[in-house]
Every structure is written in C-alpha cells, then in structure tokens.
Image 1 (spheres, one colour):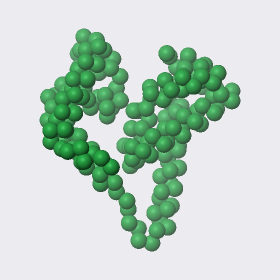
Image 2 (image 1 turned 45 degrees about the horizontal axis):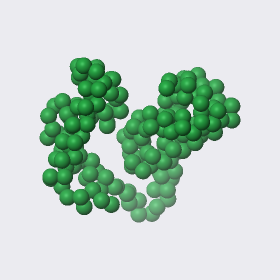
Image 3 (image 1 turned 90 degrees about the horizontal axis):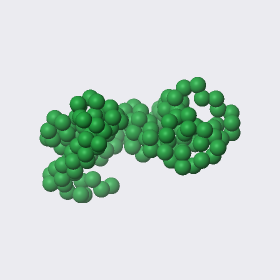
Image 4 (image 1 turned 135 degrees about the horizontal axis):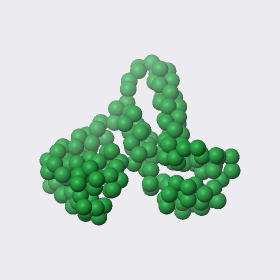
Length: 179
C-alpha cells in the first residue's frame, strides 16, 4: 500500500490503515527519540502521540499532505520530542541536587546486544545493523549486500537473528534482561 492509498484510507477513518502506518514507520520514528537521549518507552509514547495528531488532522479533513507521510510524522515526532526534552530540562533545573537520571539497565542491555552482534560474522552483523538500527527495508538490504532478492535478505535476517538469540542465551541469563 503506497502513501497515497494509506492517506486516503486514514482520512476515511480506516484504523487498519493506521495500523499499517504504525508498523511501517515504527523503527524510523522510535530511532529518532532513542538516538536523541530517549528511552525505548519514551520513543513509543512519542510515536503514538504523533500518530494521534496525524490521525486527528487527517480525519478532520484539515490536513493537506505536501510531503511523504513519513516526513510529516517525523516532523511531528521531532517537535513532540523537543517539547519533552525542554520539559525535562526545566524539571532538572528546578531540582536542587541536580542529579541526572541514567538508565544503566538499558545501556547495559544495549552493550550486551552490541557485543553479541560483534561476535557474529560480517554478513550477519551488517544485516542486523541495517535492519534493526538503520531501519532499512529488506529491498535496501538486499541491494546493499548483493543478495538475489528480498526473500534471500529475509531468510538471512531470520537466521542471523536466531544465531544472535542463541548467542545471547548462551552467554547471559534471562534475569539479565528482565526488568
């Protein structure tokens, strides 16, 4: 489903189209927040808030889309995240002790995952990084790595993810990842 079809269906109130949209741009939008000092939960919240704004404007008939949907939602996410960062900054300035909160568990989990990805072969490392961290499509990954087609890329991603899961499970206990 292309952007035009998605937008038309959303304007008509089609929630299934919104679900497609949510999944289609999830990685891209959450990466924006996570790469700018946000947690995964904050990223999810910002993305959901942005989709609510988009949905309300589209359904009201007041939205004339002059760019790609992803560009429009990305700008909403940016604005919402900036507001949240400003709010956090004001709160931290008001605190007398000035202690900054750092989510060590998330950093530790991220370190473990990156450490395990580094132990995989180059192709697996590239596939997983392109897919999960760069948000590339299977077609883009297939093109970049010279795979025959997207099915080959999907199969490789599946096998590499499985190898990563097995490696993590062999080196770390489940309790290392439970909150």
